[in-house]
Image (cartoon, rainbow, N blue to C red; front, side, top):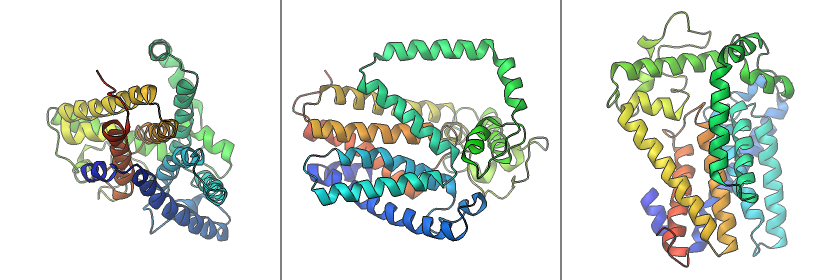
Length: 329
């Protein structure tokens, strides 16, 4: 898909066409989901399955809806759009936004906030070294006050809820929220799998079939299973660590570093404002996915891997075929 798309994107218009194809289908799926969800009173329990059979659960659904919101906003700023196209895009953006809210996917909400933060960096041209310094300082504070933070998190008993404010508050509940506790269970399993096979891991795609014996009874939850049928490692990064070992994780992180580095340098040096807007929307979409990837993983599914690798291909195609001058010296 990646290499084919790069070839396809020699034609500039094809980049927009491919985004439109998935976006139009997604808007239809979200509309159907919202109509069905309305009949259930937009309750949280039905939100876990109401998007079936289009998406397997609300988390993968929410991740892709969040992914396409920056891309939709990017399309809105295309000058060659007719008035009708603009109205359609505004309608689609509204549908996606409502769909994201009623997906009850907390990680997707967080990922869009992170994407907004990255947009701020580009918009105000904030030097990356200051971001790094702030991150190091934040990490130092987190280390210094780790015990206090752990105690504060332990006091949070707010479970996921139909009340949006309580649902947001439950993000940090690691004491009673079953979803959060199960995520920690899966993470711990991934770490134990890594410890047993640290160099090359257990093999790509094997986590779901191998993690069960690595569960500790004290960490199991009401939604734990031994059959590998309820999600994966719940982290793109720990999943890579368990399945491909330290070699695989380093390769995965290196790929992400170079993708975002190249994309950022390309954005700074591009002259074409329309392409700059497209590139920035692609960067923000990928930021939303890989921030979400800290808490969930879907690259082993077609409906997530297709848009992610398509966006990678857009970045490469813009650099190779559509930038007026060589970007990286």
